[in-house]
Image (cartoon, rainbow, N blue to C red; front, side, top):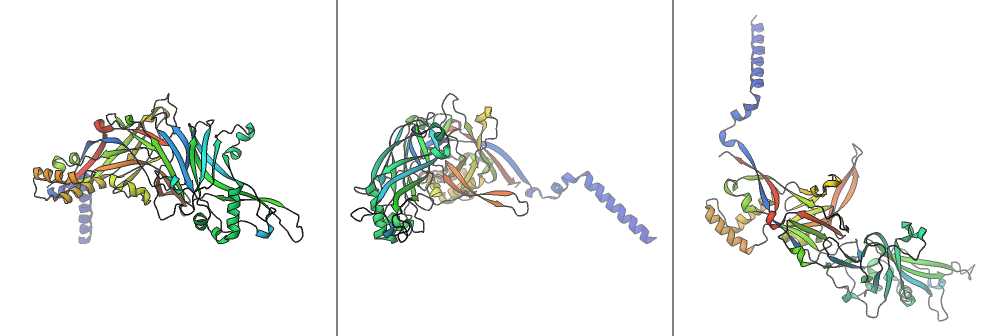
Length: 502
């Protein structure tokens, strides 16, 4: 009987406890938490002023080489591009043995012809515009090397070989000298040739038979035989063409079987190409109207390559003003909204796929050292263009949380200025002002265009393909976009704080 009563008491107690929990479950935690340990959150929006600035020279590490000259109809910026390219030498014997080569009466190897082929995959502007390019030989003793950083304002004229090969050719994207059926076949027409002299080709072949070890790899070839070519825009306006690769073609003849068929002759060609394994450096020139730097407008510009970008000044004083000085900053969202261009203007460029935000002081090294956004002092935002076509102005680049950078800036200024916990607000402001005079860029960030490089992997469990961002390159293509903001209107920064109830 006692056991039965004990069991009933236990069941009744459990039921009573369950009922109590169900009746007041939402207040149980707060009721037992000490008042001083309660956490309060608060949200506010502050304005971030932005401005358009000139980008200047960027480390010219890119194989996305452009050639030509165009004027952007939106900004009236004239951009002119050229590039220097070395050639890749495969680790195979490039030419037949000397005894098999066809020679002239003086015993010199015969070169039938020599040329450069510019293969391209994309272009901007007018496909019918007539353009000119000058191919100039780079001295093997002055050719670029992998240990030096080259910038987009480089002067390849200083690298030219004295008395070296130099040829000028005209070209257009839509080659009207070819049959229409062939031109419209992209596989057949997306290239143009630059004829080089036979003497130049003769020199290359003679160098091989004299010192074949200079052809053992690309480095030896570039530093002893041919330093590359500078593809310089030489005339015309309206087209910018993106190089796929540049090819050096050497045409010759040889005897395939001297023993059994000494009179047989085969025509052949050896092709050396520009690839990712060799150096390509871009020369970029921009003529920028001064009106684009008028920051009284309610927008800013992003214009690539190396023309304009946006800078923002994070208002740390406004963020930590009043009761927020000791608050924790949990989240800070900054959405950069794009502004659609006038539909009557011909659009030459697309909006960049990514924008990268980093401190102004870190801008130069970020791309030069192949950094990735770390979520503390640098951040990336992909273009959100999922809206309807009739609402292009609502597209944006969402920086979803730059709170770590704001906290770093706040702590950096406090430490540098020698602020202590017992300082009054007036004392803090005086110390901050003195420190800021010596560190004027402490709270400024650069917002620049970038293009991503992904690798793909397959999840072994789900068999789904996963894209992994491995690199963000500066956007060397023709990209442009306007961002809502400016010095007067600014951009909304939504900040979420938390603090204990002290």
